[in-house]
Length: 153
Image (cartoon, rainbow, N blue to C red):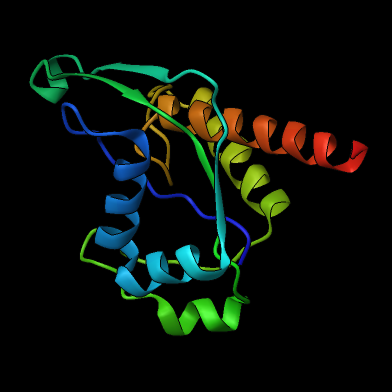
């Protein structure tokens, strides 16, 4: 398994790498983080944090979500079969599947296109809203840039 999407809010005064570790342990299990420490790698894909803002409006009880986040590329250092044995997902994870990055990118793009065609332009089918989809697409751009840089070496 080469990558995955895990989202986590950062606590005040928490280092970015500690948020990454906590998110993986909470959502995927301690064994996954142990595998990353032993055989995997992780890279912060953003030189500076990304500021995320979401106003949920009256239908969201006027909740406003502001956070600073980082995008990480995580290589577990194991095959998908090994990852399957390691995963101990929590109640937030309703389902998961292993997909290559091109499939996921197409999934996010088509979901965003469908939401733009509907009357509720910021509500996506598979992701909570357009801001999350945009962050994911930004992550794909960074992955391509990292790959290109590695190919040059």
